[in-house]
Amino acid sequence: MKHLNINIIAALMLLWLLPQTGKAQQYTGISGLVHVPSGEMNHEGDAFIGAHFLNKAMTPDTGFIYYGDGEKYHTFDYFVSLTPFSWLELSYVCTERIYRKDAQGHVINWSKDRYASVKIRPLKEGKYHPAITIGGNDVLTAGYLPGHSEVQLYFCNFYAAATKHFTFGGNELGLTLCYRYYLRGYNAKWNGIVGGITFRPAFFPQARLIAEYTGNEFITGLDMLLWQHLRLQVSLKDFKHFYGGICLQFNLLGKKYKY
Amino acid sequence: MFHRNSTFRHLAIVALLLAMSLCASPPTAKAQAPKQSVDIFMGLDFNFRDIHFETQYDFLIRLTPGFKWNMGNHWQLSGQVMFPILNQYGYEYSFFQVNALNISKEFNIKSLYLKATAGAFSHNRYGLDLKAFLPLCEWFAFEGQAGYVGSVYVSPYWEIVAPNRFVGRLGGDIYLSRWNTQLRGVIGKYLYGDIGLEGEAMRHFNHTTVSMYGRWNNKFGLDAGFRVVIMLPPYHRKQRVVNFRPASNWRMSYSMMVREYSHQMYRTDPEENERDGWFSRDLLLWGSHTMEPDFIIKEKTKKNETP
Image (cartoon, rainbow over all chains, first blue to last red; front, side, top):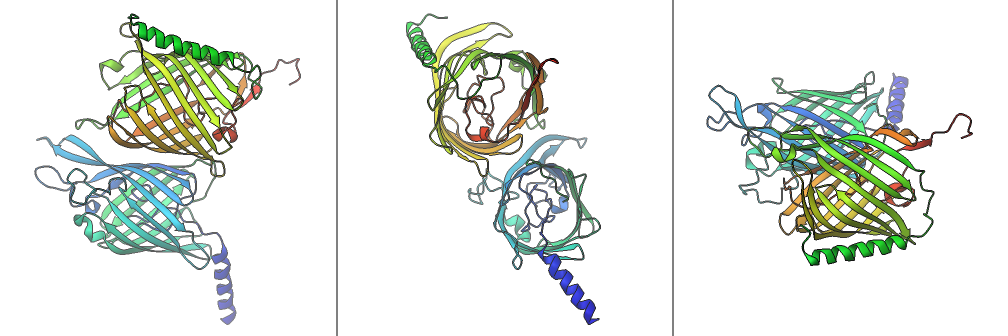
């Protein structure tokens, strides 16, 4: 038994020294878990173009309701994102908004909420310390005062996140802890300490299981990279509400990664 | 239309300067110029906008057939038209448009690189244009552009207005070769009379350049956005006397504020883009031209010739 324990410890030590990588897709096109940002970064040169279904259970309580009856609706967003350097991610997101329906229930007025997201990694993951990132959504218009009527800032938030990966038997376990602050009061339920756990199995490292706490709800999810270019993510809020997306992924430096 | 003496005088002065600069051209270029050839190509001009609540987007898609006749010694005759195949922008975009029909010459005076162009340009403009590029070292250069232009429409009816506007830009470029990153800042007077500043950060990848820009001008205020330039395959090509090929690149510019008349400047080359810059790679080795070339061009040789 003692011999076995030494072997396990040795294997863990060896795997700890292996290069640590983490890839993900959020609804913003920026790396992360599902709703929670992480300390992970995409690879330098990675470009994403994709779309994400946003369940009404996960949209802000203001801005995504029908004009008139005040009922919330499901919607979706689409995005492009780029990692120009290993320490910087940028994305641009459009979220569909529906203003009103006609008497037959057909949508007659559309608009879009647009925002830019930025994520910077000041500290790369090391042998004994986690990767640390800082970032935010809707950063270009965040300079406006929160009460400004012309700028909605529905998804505007800022965060600092830390992620550390552990490997054992070829599997990878990631722990993420994040402090997040939304500017708008109606999103305050997602403020504060949030975090999650990821697990990447050795037999299929392209897939990743996710469990996270957003500050208000638990989300479980799965994402995977297929044929090196197609990334999928599916998740459930409180095991009930579906949330998911699909995107195309390319590395503009011509490099190939498993995940 | 050509009735104003002052207009003729301006035109004559610019033409004289252009002729003098052409005469000052040294007989040899920095690198071996490509052999004479004619390229016939076509691409796609893709535009979309979001200005209506009733629709998601309006699209304008146009085919862009064109030609470039490389006449040797960096003389070039080029032309391009744009045919709309999907137009949701409105009546004024439903006709074919001449995007270029001009002659140009690139040359250098020591380390000052110049490109003079005369003829029709994009944005329904015609006139004279002079571009200059002055690399001070491998990471810093000045750039400038001056033009004297009028407007011309060929469809649905012929209309021409004599050159009546000076436009130009002046700025600097920083190139960080380790990261293939280019920073560019310019101040300029643009086609619709607006005066503005623009800063742009470009990251050059393999066959793709992505940039972000921020800009301000005195008529429309602040704006920001991004640009994407993708060099289109095939990347290995054979050079013949007459070459049929797709357009060299696909370019998209996204503006967060829909300001159609802000910071607009004509393009003189049908395939002009931010990645390649204004000058031929074999003449000016600076910036992204120091990267691996996007296109490997092999001369077509006859069977009885040794390559």
